[in-house]
Image 1 (cartoon, rainbow over the protein chains, first blue to last red):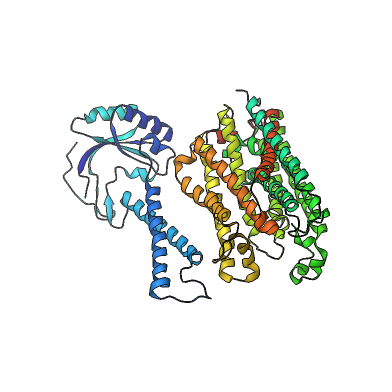
Image 2: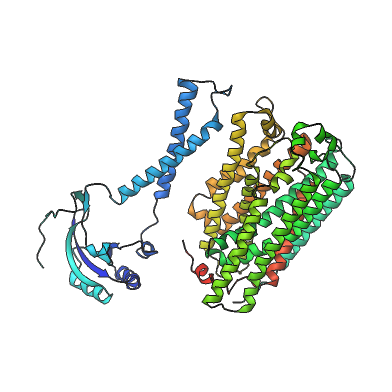
Length: 195
Length: 417
């Protein structure tokens, strides 16, 4: 349950064409966008939100290298030290024959490693629950959550979002991290202030 | 902006310079290497060297320029839009197929009618009749089949390529296409592109490299060989496209080509470098694994045995470094693929690397330990590069550099990955 409880101003957009200038204006006004939830991947949105390029391919490269070295080390240990066999008079250390296996383990390690890293970064796992700002984001709305600090006047933010073209604007106090739970049950984690 | 390109003086100077160097090398070869002196295998090394170098360069550069048309055809068939802004560059390169094809055919005809048994061992009639393996290949490796098939292949590439180019150039004159005309035009392009791809696969992809190059080692065979040659030439062809794109961009042309298009070309080069290595390795490993004398011969001629290294050992591994390890490690990240200078460097490296690849495909079978890499080899390469520069320069200065009426042009302009 990392992250802590924070206050958010949430607005929904029904069109990408409105969303993009809104994202730009909100950032220009100095508000901090917590995240934008969309029903489908929106091309170029990450760029507009100023999210940095992912490093998952660097992680993939590292996993791949580990895979290559694992295969190489393991086969070397078996066929050269632990249980040397004679295959048609070939030397015990026969690199060409091992390359297919080294290649396969490279691919396997990088693929599985990257999937797991991706799940970790998105906190996706069974029985891990996160707060939904608006369920409409799973249907047809683009939902933007703006994070409030102590100094933010949420009435200002609400007005700002309204002029930017948002609908269903509301204020939510929410846990930003994850907790153990399921989505078929409502859980009261903390007291929600009225209004 | 006007998409008409005036060739700058330096380009013309370089073209002329390379052609002069190349012709000087050719003349030198004619005088010093006695090309028409008859020679059996290993009897007149200089004469063999002359023809082997011509064979290596003509087949290499012909197959490289021909892959430009293949590139256009596969992107057309896939309904790809991203390449349309730079499409005139591969078109210009492919306009050299008839020229280089003719040169290659002249060389092949000279080899066959000059009875160059030092290069094509199967031309020797006594040897064929007394050799079980060569006798079994008699139908395929015979002068008649060799020449007829070569002429048909080169002719079809030239003709269908010409049709593809003329459709593209025709669209410049006809003005903007409406939806129905555009649809029809794309369909017509797709049909011709499919025809070219079928011909291309039946020639470069399966039989022609067997005839032209693999038959130098007449006893040896590898079913992987043609694909391997195709991969080699396709990746060099993509690099050649990249070289001209970067050059033209530097000259302030190709207004709509940006980092995204270069990135895509880079991805293609990266992918096909790995594809080449995959085929290289598959060919090597199967032969190494089964360890049969008639198959391992090919590699013994090149890298030698564990006890005694062959004369081509250095080149053989340089080949692997230039064409696989260097592209793999240098092009893996996104940044170098979007960097115009780095891409220029990598493209030149790949074109050179595969020239080396062809060198070690041709020379060991013909010259064994007598091969050299000297003024003559590089001079003939310069001649072919000069011809390519001349042809490309002619095409791009005569025609608009932007296929402005192509129905997918907008898709290409706003392309981003």
